[in-house]
Amino acid sequence: MRGDERYQDGMFSYVSLEQRVPEDHPLRAVRKLTDKVLESLSGELDKLYADSGRPSIAPEYILRALLLQVFYSVRSERLLVEQIDYNLLFRWFVGLGMDDTVWNHAVFSKNRDRLLTSEVAQQFFAEVNRQAKRFMSDEHFTVDGTLIQAWASQKNFRSKDGSDDGDGTNFHGQKRSNKTHASSTDPDARLYKKSYGKELKLSYLGHALAENRNGLIAAAMVTHADGYAERDAALLMLDQKQKGCSRRITVGADKAYDTKDFVTTARELNVTAHVTKNAKGRRSNLDRRTTRHPGYAISLSRRWLVEKSFGWLK
Image (spheres, rainbow, N blue to C red):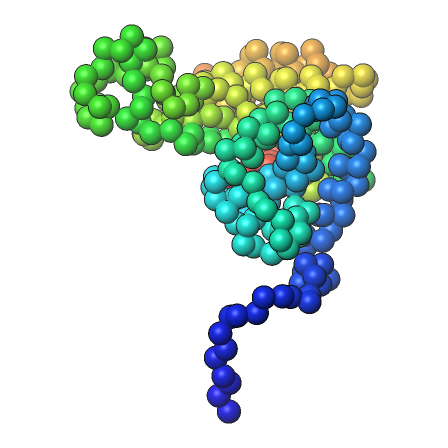
């Protein structure tokens, strides 16, 4: 028989948030790991705040909320805060109660900046890596970069000397470059295109160093978008990975990394560059000293693992 449609007039609920989340939900394991990591960072988090004054948003709430933004591809912090308000799963994961007031998105962004510009974010990532160490290779890695489109409009990419005419909506026929123009809403964004034939977009470059066993990210960073950033960021991450380590490691990469500077500097860092050879109209910087070993072919065959992380994040 047909059921009755009832009005949603209930005022009280006798089911807790904990009971509403299924026992086999993937976020349960993530929450357990996150709580363990945040507990170990409690002392470092205390150093970021004064002993007196008005209480801010708990840093544990912010870090858990940012994880949700990545997991569910929430496109903005305004929308993230909105979803935390009405999504019971999000409330449970962040740590808010059923009736707790959700923060203003601007306040959330301001408090988030305090965390991400400190060393706590890197320490959080490093502690998660330590927890996952048994799943990760410590010898063989792959590095790559990806284009991250900035949330900035082309019409706000205006001349630095203020000589642009109009409201910026019609820029046809103008010669615009990063040297002469800058975004008024996101000054750090740069005009960049990933490959020939593609349109220029205001962007950043994201870089990841993934291990070759399961494709887990071992290091990551974001830089300005330019033609040297991928190789420079890769060397910085490799240098950090090799600090205090005497064992030689390998790093796979695409042909954009087949340059003399990258290969030479990698060797100085005790890293063997397993780079795809770029011999189109030029001579590759790799020779048989590297390519004759079976490990070279294995590194290239595992290079696709880093793309999984980029695809998932996007």
